[in-house]
Image 1 (spheres, one colour):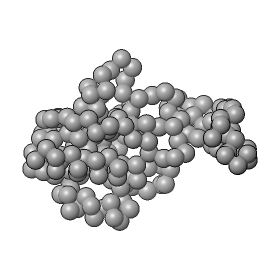
Image 2: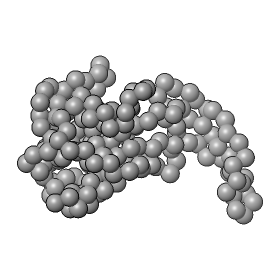
Image 3: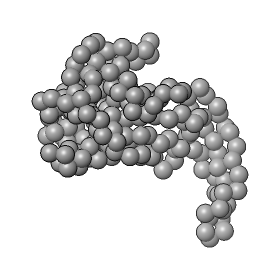
Length: 177
């Protein structure tokens, strides 16, 4: 694949849409519309409380116009350490604080966006305070057993990109036990 060019179609505060032009291996020239995160670093935290329950969020997602189970996460503030940002996002969205934090690596959520998420597993989490949500966040905190979590994943009730993080977290949990 040879990249021939790129142009911005839309530039938003948190996301932009660009058109990237590539020459394919067979010589065909093709354009792809790609969502970008404007260079923002983001973190996702698959969190487990002291009783072994997964700390999920449930919120409305405007792209699909549905409610989904999600894992806490969001943008890391400029100058903020990625680990501190992940802990902050978990605390803000759920009121839980991290016991132990494990780096699971980076994931791309879709083949047609430029987003990369730094992924973490948080264990031994404890509810220490109330949520600290922004004006546009309406997040319900829900605790799920592993069996319940796998059930909602099979039913398509979990945001697809988070499934990879959850699977990495389940693998890491087996390693650390």
